[in-house]
Amino acid sequence: MVAAKWLAVGVAVATTAAVAAGAPGDVGVAIAGYKPVTDVSEHARIDLDIRAMERAGSNWAAARRVYTQGANSNRSPGVKRTLQSFSTKYNPGQLRSEPQALAAKRFWGDWDYADRHMKAVLAGADSAKYGRYRTGALAKTDAARKQMVKKLAKFTFVPQYVGHEAQLALTAYALRDYEEAAKHWDEAWAFYAGSLEKGTGNGFSAYILAEKRSKNFGTRAGGRSSVNRRMLAAFNAGKAALGRPGRGAAALRATKCVRALLLAPAIQGCLRYAYRVSDVKVAPQASLAKESAEAWAFCAAALPS
Image (tube, rainbow, N blue to C red):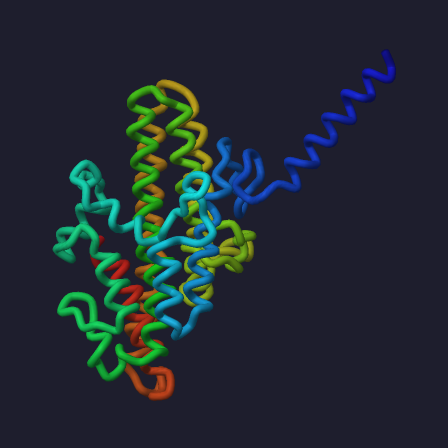
């Protein structure tokens, strides 16, 4: 009897240790402070694709392969998730009622605006809407195009899809499918933070920008971005609300908070770099192409709002 008792304890301890050592996004394993109730470890790995595109540098063909074919995040066995799909998924009509998609369509005139922009950058092509990446004196440079690749991926593609997953969570909740609602809500955070993020701005997804800009705009609390603190609080509130009936209003409040907070770092980045490139004393000629691209990438993310 005693042996059986301690065997049970040993199994429990081993199970706990396995969970603690699990991949970010496994059930109960935190991603930047958020503990999902569903398995979103593969979703979180989309940041590895962003990192791969960034590390490809001026090897545009390699970056495009990762962008269009995927590399590190599985949708299902043998099928890769792609960053491109975060934008092209909006071509079907049923997704076009989402608030962020509608705002972006009104501004850009295209549902798949992010994909069109990224393809112009990767191809080094001119676009009347998105930039002259073939002939523009600054935009055609490798320095500018590399900035556009990584910042479009992190701060346009990812936030749009975070908003999409949050909206899917609300839809599932309205249908009383609480498990599906929780899954989409967890996926939203997994995409926002990514598998590498530890809560300090060390990662490769959208989470990082709030940490960086908080140092410039005084939006820090307790040594980290107040935007990310509020984002985590909103996600925890949404998780609690979506898990039981009668909490639809609370879930909607959390979703609206998430949508608003997604914009704050992009607005900060737009203001910072628009100011920097307006004065040669602030942004010297040697870094003008890079910083101009940063200004455009951040403003492109913020302006549709």
